[in-house]
Image (cartoon, rainbow, N blue to C red):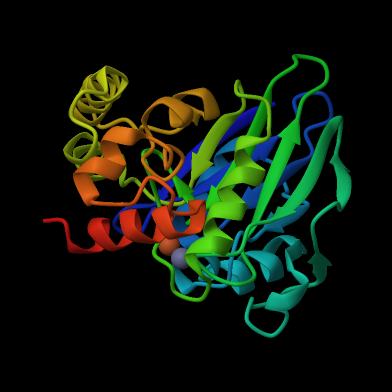
Length: 259
Ligand code: ZN
Ligand code: FE
């Protein structure tokens, strides 16, 4: 499988997913029409699907033009019907389908929005697996809680972290550098964050995306995964017996206020 990030707007990523075996292709979160069509046309392919992680405009802004131009199906969560432009298919947790030789499954991950979904793509031939997390899980961070509760976001993170740790993470925005700055602030002794910062600095200095990361790296660095860290709880004054949802809510609040 080939996954190509397509930079859109100021810091969004759309993605082009191509199954090498059959040439079957999907676009994830086309923020806007022009850069996505340029990337698709450069490959000379016709995408079969658009996979939407959630209804926000900076993820679906290109849906209508792209769907009309290529005759593309548009997938989004069943609860997002009416909010995702040009949606033709409703998906929910447990849904599975194929993209050529690739196996795709859907997980509902509410929190950033109530209809947020992740698409998990497995290439049986190479053993590679990828997850598209939209604005729910970022590298080193999580999205703002516009519609869901901290407890929902925590449950969604648990669902993502239950996947194989080698799974590559493709998220909706290039926020990694600022996320890691906050991660280090709340967990200063975590050396895995230093490694991630060095990697991020080098990639960004040469104009490259930080995606993909891996779930193993998120386990080691992301404060919204590391809600049980004694150091994070101490830094932010979160009680040792606070629930996962309470801890995530406190960390999210601290991130909202962090300059
Ligand atoms: Zn969003
Ligand atoms: Fe977004």
